[in-house]
Amino acid sequence: MIPVILCGGVGTKMWPLSSPRMPKQFLPLIHGKSLFEINWEMLRQRYQPEEIFLQTNSEQAKIALDLVPEIVERNVFIEPESRNQGPATGLIAAMLQKQGVGEELFFLVQVDDVRTPTQAVFDTMDMAEEIGRATGKYITGGFAPDRIVGGVDYLLKGKFIKEANGAKVYEVADYIDRNDEAKIAKYLNSGKLLLHTNHTTMTPNNLMALIKKYEPDWWEHLNNIAKGKDVNKEFPLIPKGTLEQITVKLHKKGESIVIEHPFKWTDFGTWESLEQFYKKNDISPSNGGVSEIYSKGNFCLSESNKKIAIIGFDNVIVIEGKDGILVCKKDLSGKVGEVV
Image 1: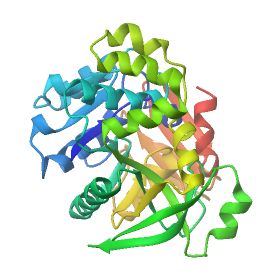
Image 2: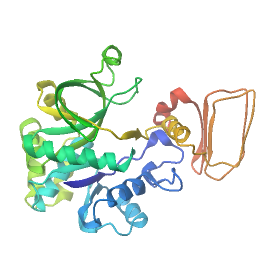
Image 3: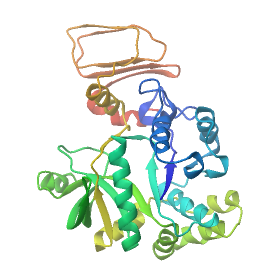
Image 4: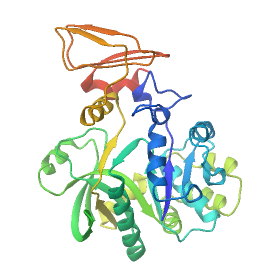
């Protein structure tokens, strides 16, 4: 199994601390460590540096190498420009083919998520490897939500396949788009609904075959890269697209597998999600102190350790950083990217 950390995006929803020059995955948000460092250290409990791969852009690669000098540079795949997650995942497959490991399964680790406990992650990876070798199918991950979470897609569990160490394997019965709130609500307490957490697992050869079938315009240039042509010339020619352009077809046809994973998964997409993680883990946000009058339920963080005073506001997020100050209602924190 080849673990690949996918590290992209600038995290505009976590402005003003997250920016193109220092995206959220490199900010020391959790006990002085970044999401990138946390995910790297998790994988290092099982893998050596030369066994871990990273895909990102050139600027973020520099930051990653500064934070973690033991990264093996030949294992860093550089996206010349952003073409969205679909072509990015395809580039992983093409670059692994180029390195001669097209028949080895890879496991995608998205950098802006935290997974605990680590052993449960490894149990899931072991299950994904076993099922991947046995079926050759596209494998992804999910967990049963206790509430509707915005900004993510959902899967419905189909036929049960097997279970080991808490990792339960099912055929995928259906895919539910994040915007189909009525359908999500319908299945919320059915025992069938899974929040989709990705964790793509497949061999590079099999993924490239799917890309050739469903997105031939991507495949043409990715195949050229796999055969040794210049990634800086070929990759920018690929149309932008999402991985769902392929995987939704598989989900709808019952040609994919989902592992209901036993580990806890937290996606750091908004300031509200960070606050919830802090609460669950008894972490205090850094600031110079907060004074509140006639106020409650607020989340305040100051990059320069300034004192923050709030009078007469409830459930508000206040973030002070070098690039500006954010004040917003918690339930609107997903809109922050729209004003940056």
